[in-house]
Amino acid sequence: MSVLIVTKMQGDTARFSQALMERESEFAQIAERARSVGAIHHQFGIGDGYVLIVDEWETADDFQKFFTDPGLQEFVASVGGTAGPPEVTVCTAMHTADQF
Image (cartoon, rainbow, N blue to C red; front, side):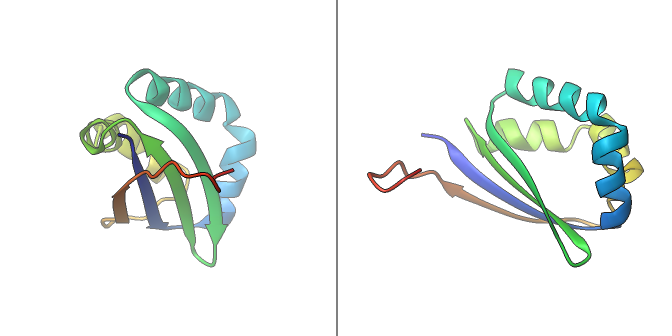
């Protein structure tokens, strides 16, 4: 059974929004790499001073290995992520009749 992972990361949201447009190909490469190691779904949201990442992964371990990669952490910092640990919530994904 897959897991849902919600990550809330403090950061410079203007810088992040700009990077989404200017570095689109890098984001696409990272997404492809994530899919190859267990990511199922992925989406960003932006709030007041934070970026929310909503993912579905095959396992929490797969996510952890991917997310803690030093190269990915350098990329996160370069697009506006601030130092310090993000808030990460992991739960079992439930597939229900009302899901869409």
